[in-house]
Length: 92
Image (cartoon, rainbow, N blue to C red):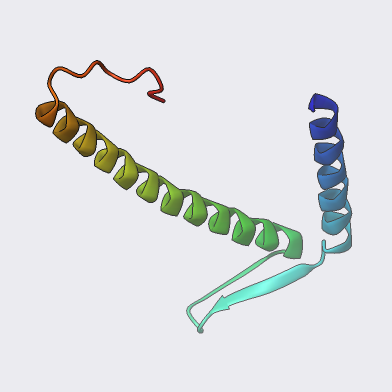
């Protein structure tokens, strides 16, 4: 499994390296007529990718937090209704 992870990581790295070498020309990003910025295309693509990844992780974090709160509430409710039950061993 560890070897497969290294192989996949190396392939992804090489693909990103080839992508960056082929998309190194400067592009201009304009925000109406107030602001313009020049940067390599690959840099802008990586910024867009990172922004999407962060947005996805934040959305997952919000959902995970909400579900954890719900589980804790249900455990407290169960403990109040069944005070003699021993805590379950499969708590994760």
